[in-house]
Image (cartoon, rainbow, N blue to C red; front, top):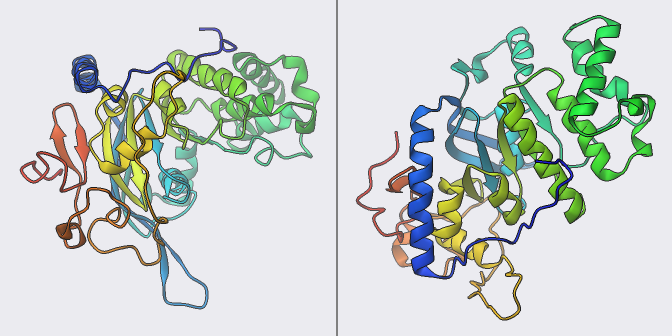
Length: 364
């Protein structure tokens, strides 16, 4: 695939059609089952919690409040949700850029939370991040050569000439001319700056890359180029992505599986094809109903959520989505639903109104 090839984000099945949804979901399960059985788990998070103290008060902001998931080696897990739901905090917790309040994180069999500073530095070679703002994440006083080569300097890898050669290789991989290495960030467009950020993330040959809304600040045509580039690099280097975004069309295109977050909790996880074809949680259904259809003759039934997102300082009792949920019943205020596998192939949801949830086993 050419890294500059544009794609149509809106080419998707009609999710409002029940027969088509069921057929697409069945096809998705058949396609993903062999891969999941043969793939190694690279990242595991269990009961992940991050509370931020409120200055001048005993209250805390429950940014992440009991998140459990895994990422398989070589896949892309898309993490979606409204702004402020805790997506970026989850990504930073995995890399231990911020310390968790509670919970466990395993990376390639190692307990990340228990690592000492020296061990954590070695682990940084295998875990990298691509930031949302391609300009703010690049030091304006440094040349591209220094920016992309900085990880090699920090980890004392290679001679000066070898690092220069490596930078040239990385710039070529991300579609930039190696002659650009002596330029400064302000001399590049937004898309080019994001390519520089991607080259920096690749410098140490990581296994996992947390892509924190890497295309949200870019034009749509440039978004397509960056997403295609990320997919090409994943195939070439066997990368694993946690792709954080609120762009549902982008997530559908790039993700193997998708996790949906709301107010610090994951409410649904499924393969990308099944989630978009057969969403089960009411919040997921509302999100997907907002995706426009590029056909003026077709209309999708929009699920409009009323009210504002509750404050993470004092979330509602029971299900956190109940105050905006069109399917809420009195029991939703009393039961705090956990993720349960409601369909074969790892389709999980946290909602008592989802068919089969009450009889489904609790995840370990």
